[in-house]
Length: 359
Ligand code: PHE
Image 1 (cartoon, helix red, strand yellow):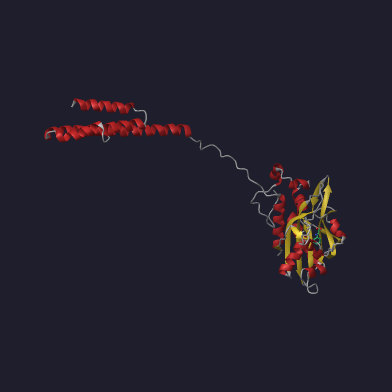
Image 2: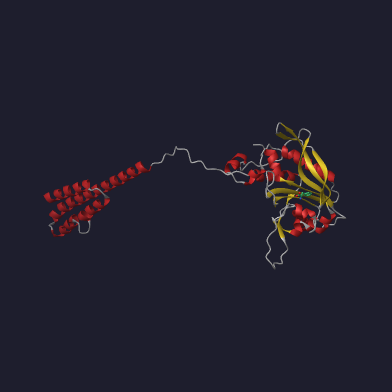
């Protein structure tokens, strides 16, 4: 069986020298494929005598097994080598620190709105909302500011464009949150206790004014609500908001939609350019307020013979500046990332009435 030994050597050498799987496959077909050398020899067995067949058959089977085993071993070795090569180039250092993700922050105005809302919610006020594009009836007329009233000019109003022939009522960008008083009384009737935070617009721009700013409206209507309740609610609010006892001062004022009306100052001191709330003998104006005018109640469908109550409106941006020591109002709306990172709040810095909210 010299030729079987030669065959064995030929194939095993070939397998040892094969450089890839395709070469191995070629060798497999040449030896063991349907028309492979060894397969063809197997077919010749039928023509042999039984003795020859037994010995040659066994030898051929051994040869077939040897080649098969060598092929498998070579294939496995190639796969291992390929995997090792891949591992060597694609390795990942899992001990490296991750890439930091930049987190956004809560804008001081949003934060203060949440804080203010939480404090008033604790006193039984629900949150109400109204549109920023408002009809001039809600923004002015219903609030006892008729068309010829000088307050319309004082409000530096942005008017919405109306095409010629458009018969929809005139609309404005609301100049204050007071129209939400009318909307919520119309919808819910009396008694009612709501606050309405939101954006308002006036044509004004300097260091302390921006054309868009934020107000929060308060409204409490019942059968026997008085100015005394207003004063208590506001002092309670400022004390909770600033975290120290804050005195208020009511100054007689005028708003068309309240009678009597008062502007409210909070106690503060100015020492060496440092503003401190709740101490000293200075005063800072923070809001307008008063007893809701009977005409306003009537316009919202509430009977002024039966109900009365107070309303107030204050600037949220101003409150944020005072509480968090932010010097320039305009920076609030410039979207400067450095400013936002410095003055912004973490997302889960939830306001609580008694918890410290200072960063
Ligand atoms: N709407 C008034 C303003 O923008 C504030 C105010 C609200 C005054 C409610 C009295 C009552 O100045």
